[in-house]
Image (cartoon, rainbow, N blue to C red):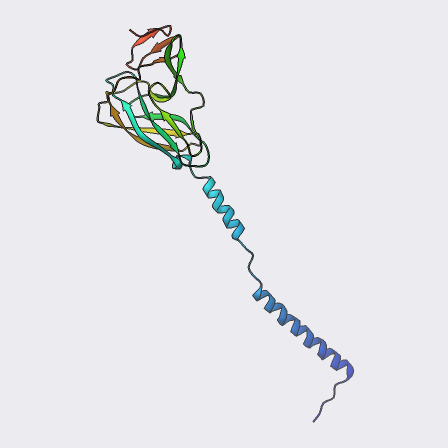
Amino acid sequence: MRITLSPRARATSALATAALGLAVLTGCGSDDAPAPSTAGSEESSSTDTSSRAPESAALSVTDPYVKAAESGMTAAFGTLVNSSDAPITIVGASSDITTSMELHETVAADGTMKMRQKEGGFTIDPGGEHLLEPGGDHLMIMDLTRAVEPGESVIIKLTLDDGSTMEIDALVKEFDGADEEYMGDMGDSHDMDGEHSGDHGSSS
């Protein structure tokens, strides 16, 4: 039996078929659409993580050593090396052999070479080095709590301006030099052997 649809029925059927086809195409398009790219965000996240790396990770010290002393003051030396592409600044130091350490520079004053605290700390340029040596910049060990003997090792902790820290293992050596006076408060001075002299004069 042949069924003949009226014009209105045929039009309704055609619309239903077109709607079904559109739904199928829309569903396929949704499945095939590429997921939003996250490459940019991942790269940004990686960059942020790298930028937050502590400065101490890029800092090393070549040939660190401490001048042997029985008591009073002494100093630590070596070469600070910055392997990063940004400056690194050391703002403090400490050790269990002393109650106080300071970052010092050596300057000419009253006809002699004297030590004083280094304002702003020690800054090592990107990819550069900063020498700590007798007669120049150094880590000043202000008040020994015990004697430091030649051949032993001393642990010194450095504090950087980003709050990170690193420890160095410094060899104690016996050598001449590094006897400059310390320019302290109240107009007095002390040499590395702990002797006192008033008005920044020469130690006896």
